[in-house]
Amino acid sequence: MIRKRKELMIPVYMINGFLDSGKTEFIQYTIAQPYFQMRAKTLLIVCEEGDIEYDATLLKKSRTVMELIEDEEDFTAQNLIELEKKHKPARILIEFNGMWNSKNVKLPWHWKLEQQITCIDGSTFSTYFTNMKSLLAEHIRKSELIIMNRCDNIIEQINEVLDTGAFITAVVTFMIFAINIALTFSSYTLFKQTTVNNNIISMLYSKHPYIIGLIVILLLPFVEEILFKAQIFKNTKFLDNHKVIKTIIIALLFACSHCITEIVTLNYKVIISMINYILFYSITNTIYIRSNYNIMKPIAIHMLLNALSLIISL
Image 1 (tube, rainbow, N blue to C red):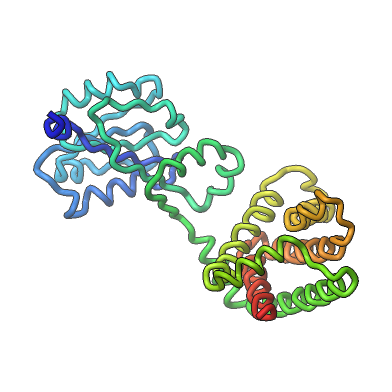
Image 2: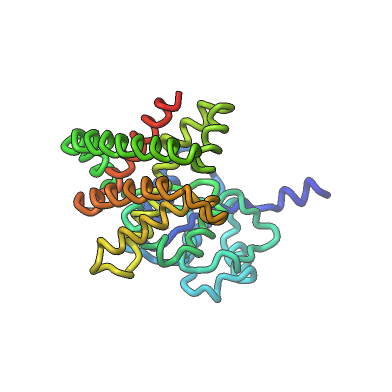
């Protein structure tokens, strides 16, 4: 009985993402591959129409039939079953509408969701992340595979850092590093302590040097720069005409995030460390603004600075 029930299950592959994120191109590429071909029929359910249309010849060759569901209210289990009865497919592809709430999706009981894939347009990711964070989070949370496309501007930014900006990046990094060393030495000389944040990193690094080293040098700079510069600074509208004041406010927020324990406990000895973080953010954010918001420049500086700090700690 259980075996028969499994045989009745129809595999479903849902491709999610906002309009123009590359869903149609991905599906067309997939159904054209030799591994996709089968004698049985494939049902493709399209929930929105973008600029790119499906190739009718390709659909016919791959034994794929397409049905359009334009309204979210029509995406019901009953309507899906009617489409199944009409075409009798062996598998189903769904190009889902990224503006629909995937929490409300109810597939027929015998439709098994084998895989959910989310396509993201790298050129508009920050805009969607800022304005439609909950929808985007729902896409990503349920996905087994995330495809980030149209990232040409990111490659250009990296090339700029490696070519014309390499020398400037190195000079700024060593300048910030010198300030960092001086302020850290002053803090330790005056107060005989460092921040809890630094103590935790040092403790974890002594136990897992390779893992923590990679996290500190590669992951944390990327996350922090994207969050505090590309998101909070660039994509928030407050004080847009007063970039200096905006930079100082976010620099203070950046510093607080690294000294949160000392701030909560009202430990005045953290003041030099706070100045250190504020100066770091202010300098790198100025570079970020002057480089026409090339986020790779502050990321590169941050990575180099963290690498130098780890080397010194050894």
